[in-house]
Image (cartoon, rainbow, N blue to C red; front, side):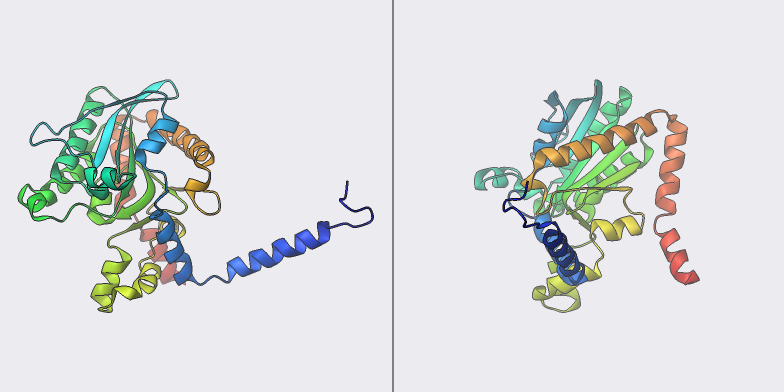
Length: 300
């Protein structure tokens, strides 16, 4: 019943919604890309352990790389998902100041990637699917990390994921920075939250190199084509997971429902494949990445 008899607001509401859609469509690509970067870095944005808690009724964390030590910037362990056991692995940035320092702001050292490799091999030994959560500014660039073999550890992670005999699904939940993110991203299926980003370099780093001015990060963000829409168009990712307006932190349960459905669907599709079929499709996926888009540009 109308709030005021004889007064009908349906037409006015529809007109306002139309105006909002038109205004949103006028948002420049630069501002939209930078908006995505800011949302991906939002201090309240859910992290790996938030998704693990919501998605998996049981989670048993495993620690250490059995070579040097434990790296809290990467967490992982056995998890239960829809009455099956999986291996969950992901970056963890930390919440408050103390936790962020403890987690090194989500920037793993070599032992973090070696721990990830160890857990992947454990999963393979028991025939368990692997789900990774990506959310890092990048691998830690410190001197100690380089001395302990940061580049080799990331390369080993990539080689391991390429050769696994079990299904793998990667989920970009926040920042996807450079090789530090890619190390957990060479999966059979790559999903991405709408307001996450994935890039070879940070917008600030790109701007500092190209324009000698980090303040040009907004322009760099658009040029890098780092949004979920860009990457889906290039076939770098396989599916975009919807988020509420304003970001995943606005309604985590809704995002978890969307992600849970997508994970369930992709795991079911992958689990029926043999190890040989998995690797064949995996190799073809990465060999052909971007080719369809480039061919389309050439034809046009």
